[in-house]
Image 1 (cartoon, rainbow, N blue to C red):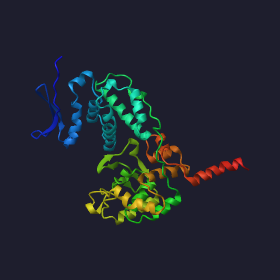
Image 2: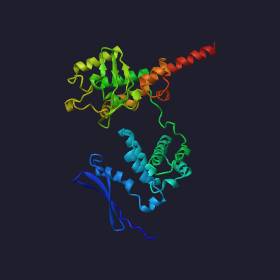
Image 3: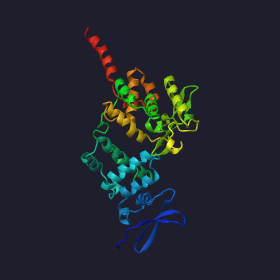
Image 4: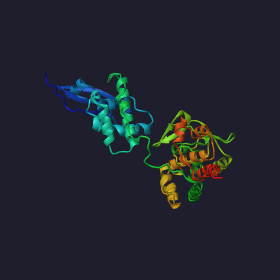
Amino acid sequence: MKRVRQQNGGVYLDRRVNTWYYRRTVNGKRQLTRIGTLEEFPTKAEAERASHAHQSSPAANEAGVTFKAAAYRYMKEKMPGRPTTAGGYRNYLENYCIPKWGESPLSEIRPMEVWLWLKATPRAGKIKAHVKSVMRQVFEFSMLADLFPVQRNPMDLVTVEGASKRTKAKRVLTYDEWERFIARVTSEPQRTAIITCMCLGIRREEVWALKWSDFDFTTNTVMIQRAIVESKVLSVKTDASEAPLPLDESLVRLLLDWRSKSEFNRDEDWVWASPYQAGEMRLHFQSIQKEHILPASVASGLGNIGWHTLRHTDRAWLNASGTPLGIQKDLTRHSSITMTTQYGAGVVPAMREANSKVVKMVIQ
C-alpha cells in the first residue's frame, strides 16, 4: 500500500475576498479548504478553531471521523447561539473532551471508558455532568451529519454521580439581613437598581438591560424584553422570561423618583445609563458588585453575596409568604415549576412559625 504523505497545514486569510482558508500539502499536492469569511471569524484564533474540522488525516478518515473533527464541526455548525452557552460548551470541549478523546475515532469511544474517566476526574459532579452532556451533543450532531451511524447515543449509558448536588449552599437573606445590607448601599442609582432586582427577582443581566420604555406606569407593569451578556444586547433567556411583571406602588414611586433625577429619562434611554458614556452605555453590573454589593455585604456581616443571591431570596420570600407555586413560577419566569423549586431555600422565621403550628398539634 502506498504511503500517504501529509504536511501539517495552516490557516491564512485571502485579503482579496476576506475569506479564511485552510491549506495543506498531501503527496506533493496543495489542498485548499474554505473555512469562512472574515465576518464569520473576526480573528485568526477563531478561524483556527473552525479549521480543526478539516484537519483529520486520510488515515484517520479511513478508521472513522475523530472526536476532535466532529467536535469542531459541531462548534462551527450547530453551537447554541447564546454567547454564554456557546462559551461554556466550547470550554468543556476544548479543556476536557478534546484533550482526552480528540484523536479517538467516534466508533472507538466506549461508554464504560467515558464513565471511568469522568469518575476519576477531580471536578464537581455538576461540571462532569456538563462535560458528559456536551459529548452527547457531539454524538447527536455526528449522527445528524452522517459522521456516525444513527443509533442510540452512547453517552446515554454514562451516568454521573452527584450531578445535581450543589457544592455551594444557596444563600438566602433573612429580613433582618436584607435591612442591614441595603442600609449600607447609599449611592444612586446603584441602590435603586439593587432594590428593583430584589423586588422583581429578575436576573442581573435583565436588570441592566431595562429601558424606560419597558415600564408602563399607567398599568404599573414592566415587560422584560432583553438581557445584556458580555456587553451584547440579547433576547431574554427563555420564552417564559419575556413576560410582564406587576409593579408595586412603592417600587413605582422609587423608580419615578430616580427618573426625575436622571438626566437620561427619555423612553428610549437606559434606566441605569452611565453618565461617563453620555448615556450610550449602561453602568456595568460587575462594577456594582465589586464596589457596592460586596463592601455592603461584608460590612453587614453577611460575607460575600452577589446579584443571584437576590433572585434566590426573592423566590424564598415568595414561598415563605404562602404564594402558590404556580404564581411563584410566573413571577420568577421559569420555564417549569421544577426549576422554580430549585431556587431559594427556607426562611428561618417562616420555617419556625410553620414548625410551631405542627408542634402545638403534637404537644397540647
